Length: 303
Figure 1 (cartoon, rainbow, N blue to C red):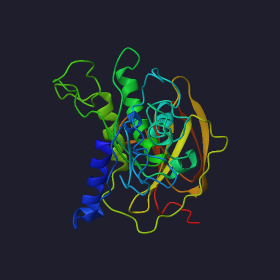
Figure 2: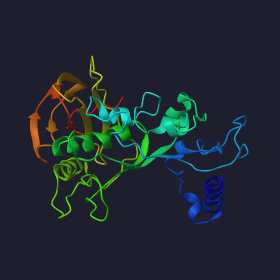
Figure 3: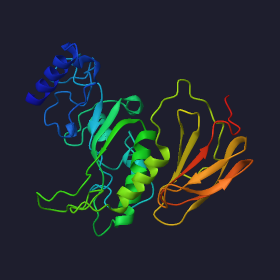
């Protein structure tokens, strides 16, 4: 109850402040541990929720989770590891949105329906994975690359990964970091730097265009996300989440494009493939993303 009242009062204070009111308030994390049904599994307690705090109590604008991709319920590497961790429904095997805002994991208090969870504004203030006997440095790097993409594609407005550099001030396994304790980069730092370098853009676009692409017979372990840079360049990110093997898919680009380049962040920041005058692109996807770049003046389809 004390936590509920604090969060209620924090929300009210922020929204009453002329400067702070424009900023969203995020909920507490791990409210799935709620011992009494004070309604922290809601952003705003709805009528009929039968909670200890009254209906209409406002706690936050965004749900907040710590959905680490390895969890006692899903401790080993698996296909679609980060995709499943970002799943807002009961299909999520880790400590995700459903276990904190759907049905709380400690006492099973009812919160939002699965349909409502799909639309619930959400952020992650802590996630990631550690290098251990099951997770190599390479898998750690690949997981973190896919994690950012899966979170964004599945509706998370903000994702914070634990940790930039390994901690040295506490015991236990401290191999979460993009950087080792001596500040040397792990593969995760190099891969992420390559991805953000390829996607980097300091501007914005007023009216995004459309690329009429399709991936016929798309396997369950292949995911895609279309981005567009401020100069109109399309950046189609496609990634696989397979522990073993690969899926070969054909990307239908919707029309013939004069220039298409493919980047692989596990290799570097230069194209690994360049194509001219193509409308179909065959790619092999295993455990990391590729970025397909199509300049705006190279046969863009706006429809």
